[in-house]
Length: 324
Ligand SMILES: [Zn+2]
Image (cartoon, rainbow, N blue to C red; front, side, top):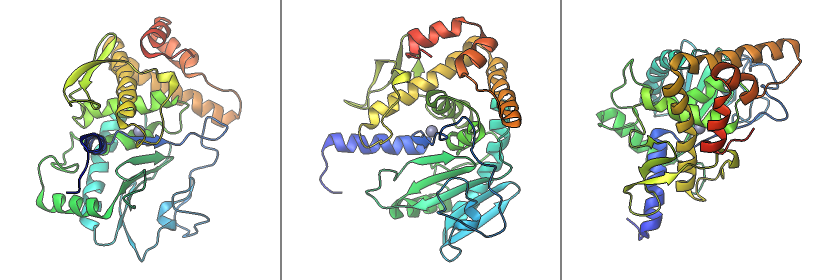
């Protein structure tokens, strides 16, 4: 191993943890509007008018068949570099379990009738290396060559603790990014979107068990110092976060944990059915706006308050720094 300072090592291990749990990911906001500006991409005509990673493309029609293998079953397409088909098969199996689990958890279905997962090999110095991303109907995992080789070996040998270890109907390895796909057509603020994707991991991926959401603080690993558990004040969710995780992964991780704690608060205070009602109401309003082309929706005033009551606004402001 090359000579690295403990701080850098810590940062790398945070990123590794974050990847394993699929935490860091960017949700691309829709430009100038609440909903996808276009209809879902139509697949099958083999016409790609841009880049595979551009929005509103059908990735299946855009990737190079020379370099990628496409594995499909039902409503899922998994795209992996050639030679890594076994990895693709495992992801495909996982997505089937995920679909049922996430629909049950959120009480809604995705807007799109086809979901893509792309395993993309990138360079080590790419800030996206080790992270995931979701937009519209597409999830992307960014891996460097060395990691994807390790991923394949882990699957071949079924190594305990691996991302795709022990696939089963009660577990969803792709929870985080797939949850983004489920809620991607809804008008959720960034904190609510990242928060639900992270919170869904708790029951569905058995991840983040080391984080405790308390009344005025988080009890979790200190990523900056000694790796021991400590109390941290909640992040200001309104302040957002720097999307480049290389800037300060620990700060980003804290922001994600805070956003997750909002949903845990809702789930534990009001109950799972109320939590689902939030997504169902948002879904109904979104459909209406899409159908008529009229109106807009404010997540807090039009959805949270009618479903949970106005005291949620006080909690949001006082505990999580969300004012509007
Ligand atoms: Zn995310």
